[in-house]
Image (cartoon, one colour):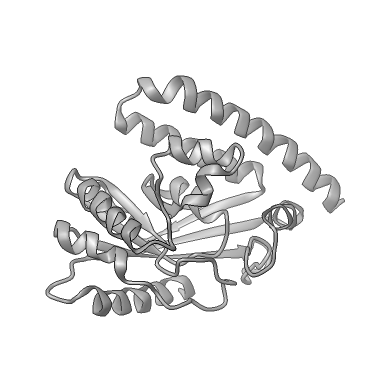
Length: 245
């Protein structure tokens, strides 16, 4: 039965992705930024529904920018989950841009791409993020730099926080967690770590019992004189508390 359920969800998601490609090519270019954001948020929420995932938002998402959202990273689902809770512009590894279908949708959603192995590109990204924050946008990063297993947070990289310091913008910690809807226990089905393939992670998620994606927002805060490393450590502790709450 789970395999049949997984196949049904795959079909629904593929149809939804095709609809998303049409929206990205035809509808989004003619919409205002606010309506584009609303469209991305609605599409992401529907995607979760097709995957058998419900959304639970705790705390207060930012009403507007500038703000830098700082979240833990568990799964390929993290970006649509955060989009469904509150539209934001993500900083993502440059590989995503070349993923079939997904890269097109990510680009249409305003993703900023970074070549993580290049220090020069990290500096370029800090400048892009700073400029986006100065124009009042909501930008999101995963400071771990890669996905964890959901049991613990990997050490945060502080470099990209410089953008918020340079723009004099606040940062807001966000804790992400996936839970089995029936038991409330942490679900590892959406995890995407180590040698796992993306296809394997997606299939396991779609065959799993109903999952709840929990997005918990902390309070927005400014650096208040802290350098990016000290601020990063503080935000990591805040994210840890939120994801366990």
